[in-house]
Image (cartoon, rainbow, N blue to C red; front, top):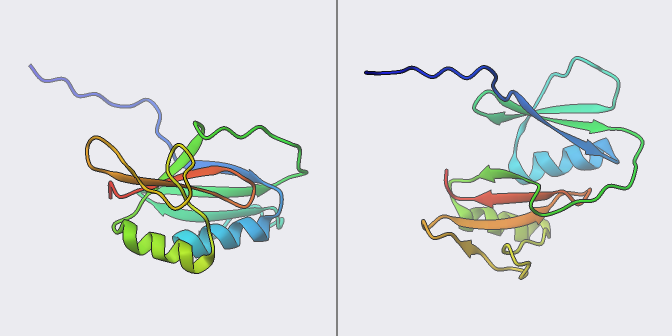
Length: 132
């Protein structure tokens, strides 16, 4: 007996609240080489990026209010070559570390997947792994 499961909802985008649109858009473009998409608002407060798999990342500038950022709340992007990505981070002067926070260190999950953590310009945590 076979059952087909259909999701009643699907994820289409991730929205990130930022202090300075250009600074954050430059970061996501340079670090991840995401392609910028046309965005409908045309108000200078939004930037949309194609992050693959029919998903987009929306960067939204709004009046900044202090926020609490916890490493458990993070976005994760997967890359095909961790060593090459780490070389890019080093070239861009972006610090990375493992889950406990040891700078320059890489986690190795029990299943063999490598993972590192960086922060974007507003302090949001981003996991990068090689589960690509």
